[in-house]
Image (tube, rainbow, N blue to C red; front, top):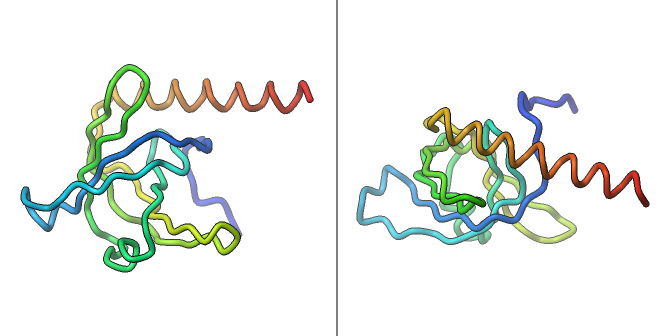
Length: 124
């Protein structure tokens, strides 16, 4: 399988709230955590029922709780997947609306975490 990603991605577990935009302002916010994060998008953990209810192409309003404050953005569902080992379901999203400042902050966090993991592994 080829790597389709354009951005460096690291495993994370940041709290995230999200809802489908097509359901309007009355749509309830779902609470979850990220599986991984990059400057271009995030994978978020969801229940199997929620995963079934979402479709590739759905547009999500998201609030990702990062160090330094929340990032508000719009994401598009690129794919849905389930990890057989953990039995967890995920939505892989790409950011389609994100301020330049928030993208820079995400990239700095991702690079910092990635370098930290690299140093931890090389010290072992």
